[in-house]
Picture 1 (cartoon, helix red, strand yellow):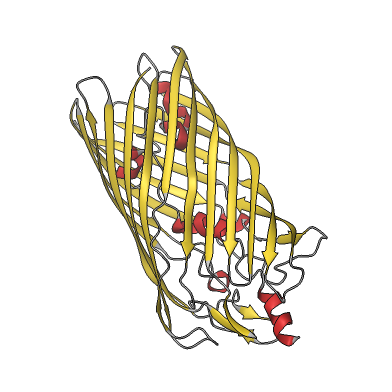
Picture 2 (picture 1 turned 180 degrees about the vertical axis):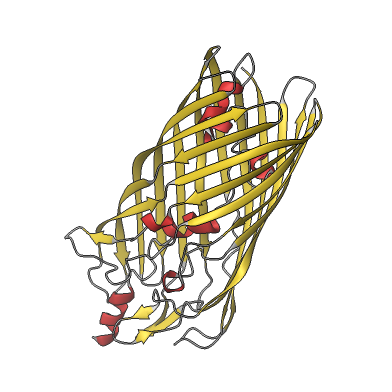
Length: 414
């Protein structure tokens, strides 16, 4: 009976933390290749149809005709975990999940309605990562040895229109509304839970351009996506299955950037990227009868973060542009909220990229970004606490990650 009680307390120990995880720093960079190649420092310099994904004001500065863009980011994500001491059935040692290869497709197009008005439409994969830990990485002895954390996935898509207006010869303003679809799944040896949901949000932006400098400002609203789904548990746990809901909270975002023309063909941009992670104050999973399945572990104590990014754009010649960038992202996740599916390490980004114009009028964008996840020692996580036993230490140890992202973009005139 005691083993069953303990198992039920652990049932939703790590379920659906991917929603916080991939938002908190494990995510890949923004999808357009020009953003990727600048380490995401392009809120002032970004142009073309995909600029509406970052700063919706920028599409008003496109040429005579509209543009279309298709592309994708393909990633390789490796996470490493070192447990210092035995934690129940989970032995000390090095553990790593399966290397994941997320694919983040996107498309966008924009068209001029008049000399001072443009509109567009875009689709992007905002978050698209997951983890799959091997057997016995996070074991606990609950009558039998079972893993309390195994596999998690979260995919978040955004789709919506943009309207941009040239307020003056140098100032552009823009707004975008989007629908956001989220699909999450979590599996362990104890249970499987999954759900889908739909919500909405908006972006607003401004950009000022001059001969020797440019400035951009963009704000993206926070979102609250209610997931509806079901859970299945394994005997002898009760209840065995049923319906459940959870709210996926993603923070608002404020980006500001200034770009200077340091040489006739070279621009240098510096961005600040603020995310209001303190809004993500809980991740509560509610059974259909109103019971909270992860009671005691649903609160989150995230901190707001401020990332710094800088990049160089060298317009080498009319048909070729080179880019390079460097960025740093702090982590919003305190030690007590760390779990094996939650991204919690600080990250440094190093990027390179180029745009090449082809003979038939197309533009091919290529970019690469390396994301170094700094080592973090976690000694006080409460996400692995087991009612009646206390801290199991199953999630405590040293975490790090290494990610590679390659972006490919193809664009042309409408």
